[in-house]
Each structure stands twice: as structure tokens, then as C-alpha cells.
Figure 1 (cartoon, rainbow, N blue to C red):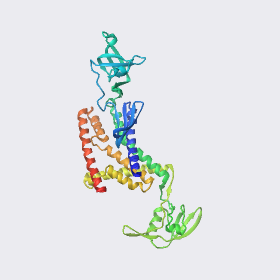
Figure 2: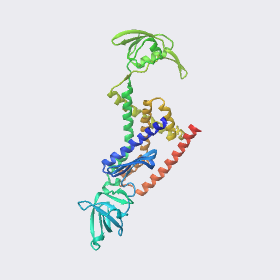
Figure 3: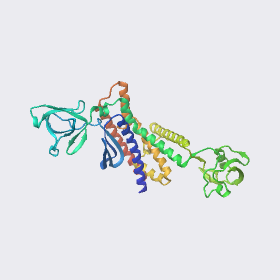
Figure 4: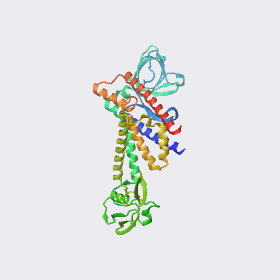
Length: 419
């Protein structure tokens, strides 16, 4: 159960921050965001704040931000329709009631002559109480359409995704993967603040309770000045000398709180990868400081980003088989293994997954963020957008292929771990 919870929390956090990036920059661009969803399938929880409905859905395998203009915009109000209108004090339409008008006794019922709720924002028609007089009613930009008791806010053209500049649209899409990198960077900083950042100073870190260093009397914080008379200037020097001398007594000259002390330590012999080496049971020294933590955050984020790109390169060149890819099942099994090694390793694992999610979404694959960014790049080169229907078809085919790949990867995971 703890693994299930860890998996849901990690995966949920990655999706949440990814979609949060889309939401923040879409709202900054003035795009109407109808829904912010974590998961797919039936709604488990739903609440509305401002213009956006925030939902939690049954299957925690992704999420989405539904922006106005990306899907066909609601019902078209055609001439001859009989609708109800609720007006504010400025005589602007705030609610357009398509059916069950009897539930709104204060509405004005009209027969529509002409309507435009995207560009010019008006409805023209004949009110029931003045059948021969044609009236024009201005529509409020935040008016809602009511159908079967459900309210849906209209989306004037300037609130739709497609009406925004190329830069605004690009940023709204790029912000999702960007947030995954930011999340990983912040988590790596938190880990470094709590665990410290390894340094190369010749200073003893944590002493293990059953090691030769503890038995000899060495203590955490001792600064090693020399070993067997040879001066040491770095932690690398200390490690190298210890490893070269298994079962051989070594005289450590250490500085402990300003006092020089000579302590004899005999490294325990251990075979690692077929080679005999010496160990004394001392961890490397660490430094806990905000500056070091931020530096470590950058280094770790860069390192894992580079590693993932290296693996992608091997996949493209055939050095890495598709059978070695993992999907949700493989990630779950790996999460179970990592969770047993402690909270910090679990956080580090989550950061690596976040970087991986960011990179995967930036690949120029249709249906992913990178695929959409690729279409924006083409638009920038040709000076006009690609036909929406053609782009939609490409994304549909890409999504179908991704689902097929997901099925193959999931089946391989099941065979690898459970069969």
C-alpha cells in the first residue's frame, strides 16, 4: 500500500506541476481555461474557482488543461431559435438559456434573428412581449450559456487560444515541460539542503558504527593532514590511500578541534567487482549551505538531463532496445524498490522522472507538447498557421501510435516483472 501511495503521489505531482505550467502561462496570455484536470476518465472531485473548473479524475495517468478555442466552441445560436436572456443593470446579456426557460421566470424570451457571441458579442431578435420590434442585446464577455441546467462560459475570440500571438501560444505549451525541469531543480535543492553536498576536503564525514574508523577512534569532523607521513590535501587522496592498503595499518595524523592527533587504522579488506580494496567505514564529507545546494540543484538537473538524452540517442541508433523501455508498470516496480531505500532516494527518483517527463514531452512527436511546438515552428517559418483540420489529424494519428507504443511497453513490463 505504501508503494501505491508513493507512486500516486509522485506521478500526481509530476502531472500537477506540468499542467500547472500550462495553466499559469495560458491565463497570463488571457486565454480562457475551462478545466484543469489531473487524471482521465470519470470525475472523482470537482470544484470551480473563477473561470476554471478544477477536477480530479479516476485514472491518475496524466492530465490536461482545456483551453477555449482548442475544441469546437459550444452550441451555435442560429436564427429561429427561441432562447431566454438574463440581463444585468447595463442591459448586457449575462445568461443565454437554451432550454427549460420556465426555471428562469425573469428571463426575456426572444426569437433569434442573428447572433454573434465570438467577435461582435450581440444577439438580435424579437422579444415575445414586442413581437414586431427587433431588438439588439449586447452580450457581456463573461456571459454563460445554460443548457440542461449546466452553465458554460462563452469564449470571445480574444479569449481563445488561436487568437493569441505565436509567442504566447508557444509559451503556454512550452511551460508544461519547463515546470518539470523547475520541479526537479527545486527538489534537488531540498535534498542537498537536508543531506548536504559532498566536498573534496580531507575531512571525515559520518562514521559507520561497525567500521574500522569507529573502532580506531576516528570521529566525524576530523581533518586528515597526512597518512603514513604522506601529506593529503583532498578527500580523493584519503580514499585512494585507504583503498590501496587493505589489512595494512595506516597512521592518520588528524586535526581535531585544533589539536593534532595520531591514530592507527587498519582498513578492512573487501572484494568489489573482483578487486580487493580497503574500507574503514567513513562517508565523504558534506557541506550544508544554500549556495552549495543551489549549485548542486543545477548540477544534478544538468547531469540527469544529459543522461536521458544519451539513452535516447542509443535508442535511435539501435544500441538501446525498445524492449528495455518502461511504462507505468515498470515505473511502479522501480518506485517500490527505491521507496525501500529512504525518502531522499525517493525524492531523487521523482526528480529524475520529472526531467524524463519534461524531455519526452519536448520531443517533436505529434500529440505531445513537442509536436505542437513543431507546428508553431513551421508557422513561424511560413508566416501563417497550418490548417487546423490537418494539424488535428496529425495529432490524432500520433496519439494513436503513442497508445500503441504504451500498450507494447506495458505488456513488456508485465512479462518482465510478473510472468
